[in-house]
Length: 312
Image 1 (cartoon, rainbow, N blue to C red):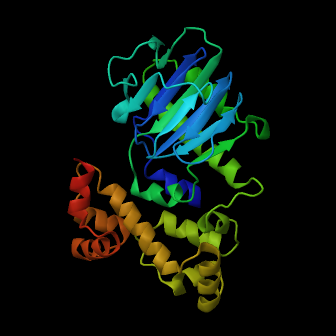
Image 2: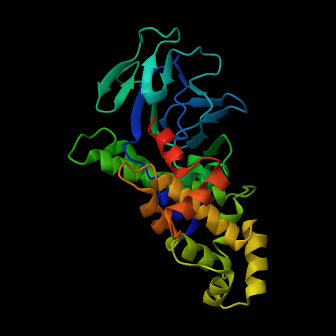
């Protein structure tokens, strides 16, 4: 399991919101759904994505934008176009005044817009849930990033465009997995671009010593790891391993492992039938007390308080 897969594998899309929007100018959508992460793909036409703070970016066909929440943003044909629809948490839609939505209609399965054959088509995939594991990923991203369509060639975009309008058995799962694949592909492409500043754990994945160590930590978080054990597994001395890991990742091995375990625990605690004791064993703590102590020290709340807040 590599660094990106490890960080995405926990909070995978589950019942993600996916929509195809078909629009004729002028159009403008104010997004206030507070979602942690959204992908916007321009299939045809032109569009602007304008974060509440920061520089707006114009999309051309094939471009994919990743918007990091929860801050509001706009998607519009032109930056001067006033919003015609407001998207609230839970994907509730209203007009700008909070009243009945006018000018937008449903045109089929997961398809809406202001015309049935508008020149602009957008695909939107929204991760509605906050997952603690993904926090390491989210803090590494800018509020808005765009991968130009002419800089890479991915079969996932036309596949998603084709699948999003289907209503076959199991279609929701198919779309969730396609969204995950597209997110990973876009992030890999973006992190590899000149001038990008990928986080230390991502860059360290390619290191012949630290990369295998990260994969072991991600794949077997419950194993009683020590710096000496990791060094032995990677074939270097304990001191050399510790120096190299800290220099590349940005924190010592055991500190990274603690953060990884507690992030996994935070995500697992959101499961309806999870117990603190069971989660403790899954992430490498010998008892619920040990997990609770570490969890509260790092996050300021107990595991039970964290779980209660997640289900409010």
